[in-house]
Length: 97
Image (cartoon, rainbow, N blue to C red):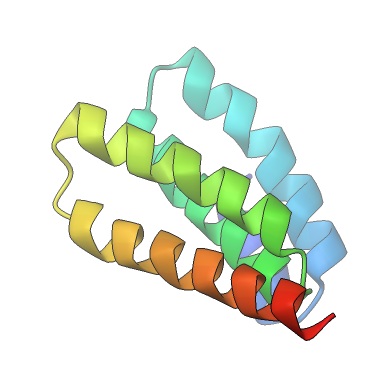
């Protein structure tokens, strides 16, 4: 499911990508694939960011960073940096309104 989501994401069909990621996520959790869950959540966050849905992207990345911390994942620093960047983007967008 997540590979299908990635394919739709590459094709520019965010809605279908999110639908397939949404189907893959509970499967990853069911089999306790926390790394796979983090990857899916990161991809979902990227789609939400591109669509301008910063709050949703931030929520997903917060979960990614939490998983990274629990797993001692090597992407913790880069995922945390992305989360900080999104928070800054949201702050700037709020200041502009």
